[in-house]
Length: 107
Image (cartoon, rainbow, N blue to C red; front, side):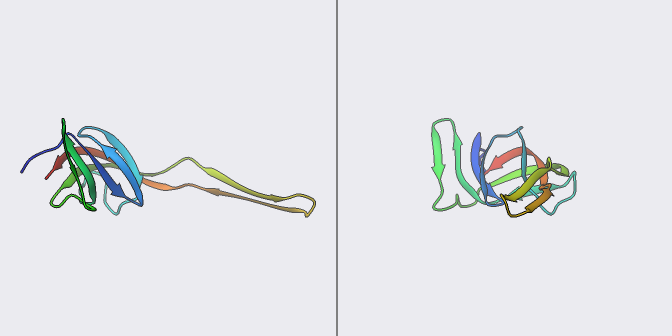
């Protein structure tokens, strides 16, 4: 089993470029803080000049990460307004997230 320096991983409908040791906030995952999660949807992995591109994913590759925290992001205000119609709607939203610490990228 070999390790990679960096990878592009897909989780929560978004793509992230990850490296071992980095801290990353992703869409909420069902895991407790302190637990280890494996992200298996790896689109690209590389070590130096060697790059492995998936079709659509790299077979057998995974990113091992540790859950640091579960939380909710900053409040986003959604304000709807129609001029001259006496229509105003104000609504707030806080998106839940999972904070991951990337431990290693394996293949």
